[in-house]
Image 1 (cartoon, rainbow, N blue to C red):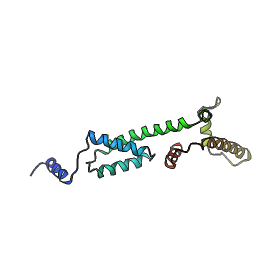
Image 2: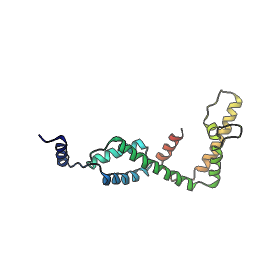
Image 3: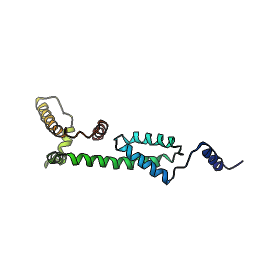
Image 4: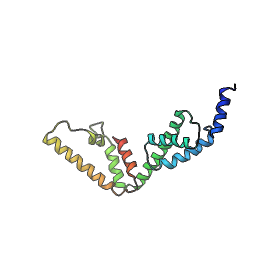
Length: 163
């Protein structure tokens, strides 16, 4: 009886499967880059990559190999998306966002952090404070409406990440 590896190789050849090598890794990277530009979540990209490798009749590598490749491509795509968004923002909006990220002198928390806080209790002063915060957010969002190049999925992913 032949060793398992020889038998395995015969079965792969018969079924038309190939090993995941450097060439296929580069091909998968290019395929992932094209899909990542559409803005899917990394977990969705990972599932699609596994499905694509199966469609190409590739013996799947260790799962961490695919995860690492997807994470790298997703991070690069996210950086590209952030750069595209940033390049389209007016200077005033960039300055406003920078200001939101700076902590106040008397506190180590930024205004953005404060915008995310829940009200401590339902009282008139607390409600007035939250109405003011709402108006600030409304102002910022109003300035961002001009950016029409974001897909809903990318925007949804960014909102999910922010939360």
